[in-house]
Length: 195
Image 1 (spheres, rainbow, N blue to C red):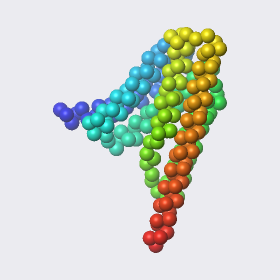
Image 2 (image 1 turned 90 degrees about the horizontal axis):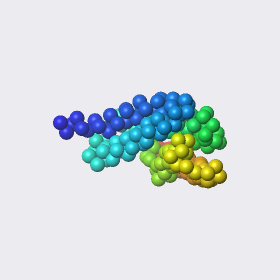
Image 3 (image 1 turned 135 degrees about the horizontal axis):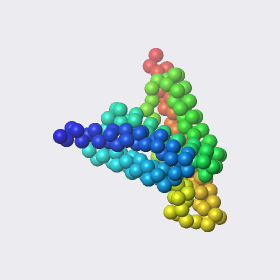
Image 4 (image 1 turned 60 degrees about the vertical axis):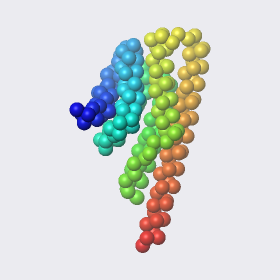
């Protein structure tokens, strides 16, 4: 029986993957209440599956791939649809999605030139993801007027959050690129010395 529970983190991740399209669809339709409920459920499932995997050592190789994929898809789809719905500035989405595109290109180059590397999550990378989730929740809350703010206060809160998220995004990009670079240079140097 215990063995079956070990699949629970992956099951939650699959549910989160399945919620990506409905979250995007409901934001695009302007049904922000449903989008908020689905997004909050997905965010909580992310916390729970991570905690279960670490607490009970229920980590798996498929989970290491699926979990960040589900997180990334959920955030990117939410950001893009919020921008298309004209409630999130385009510059914020470009900065955040652009970071991931640069990291994917860097990972591809690293793999081509050096070999496979599984990047370990970093403080700024995790902080950036958490800040993006908070930004999306706050924007959805203001759209359903659960978080009622005056127009000026709302702009200040959203601008402040966007500024924090973009700063964390750029910092984490530099951190990941530094880690890729230093690790790659050290590996190439060790290979050269071994010849």
